[in-house]
Amino acid sequence: MRAAARLQAMSRLAAALALTLAAGPAAAQGITERQADEILKELRSIRQTLERQQQPQPRQVQAPPDDKVAIAFQSGGNSIGRPDAPIVMVEYSDYQCPFCRQFHISTFDEIKKNYVDSGRVRYISRDFPLAFHENARRAAIAARCAGDQGRFWELRHVMIVNANQLTAPSILKYAGELKLEMGGFRTCLDSERYGKDVDRDMEEGAQAGVSGTPSFVVGRLVNGRLEGVRVVGAMPYQALASTLDEALRKIPAR
Image (tube, rainbow, N blue to C red; front, top):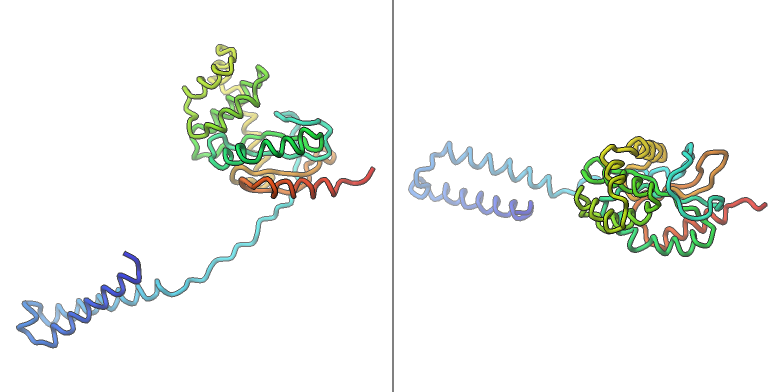
């Protein structure tokens, strides 16, 4: 029951009780005067509480996060696009995250076609498995194990599309469907060969202010540092395209 409805109900009950007491002892039907007073006090207390709840509460205004980023950038990892592309776009993702899936199926292909394939952007995949997603870390390691056989991006795609079906048997099924050599893949996955690499990605993401997925850093590599802006969430294509265009406009003329 909503606060307003509870308040109305209590008000009607209080009014009924007051009329009963006014009608005299016969109408009270066994309720003593002391008991009636206690009930009225309780009703008044409830009424006051409900009235306070109905009053507008001040909203806590939080300062917008600082979206500027300047962090030490680790080399290596899985990327697509020209290694010397003027702009770098890093995605910190969680394979079990529904928002990562949303970005992947609605926006990623357009970003790849218009910016990566054209040579203007190098796209880098980083792992940021969230603690409450029990299958995300295993999936992150699995994708890297597939990379040993040159199939990182293929398994990455399958797992993100099936973000809600990433149990251990499911991951093995996807790997089998991609015709991976399963003996080596299983050994890599079970040994968590790439666990420390996943941890390094998370440390880098934390330095960039990443706390949720997907998050992106768009910028330039300057003397081993990534300088740019952080973008959070499954942004629509036009929003990310605007960020990329702005970064490209800021490239110093040669």
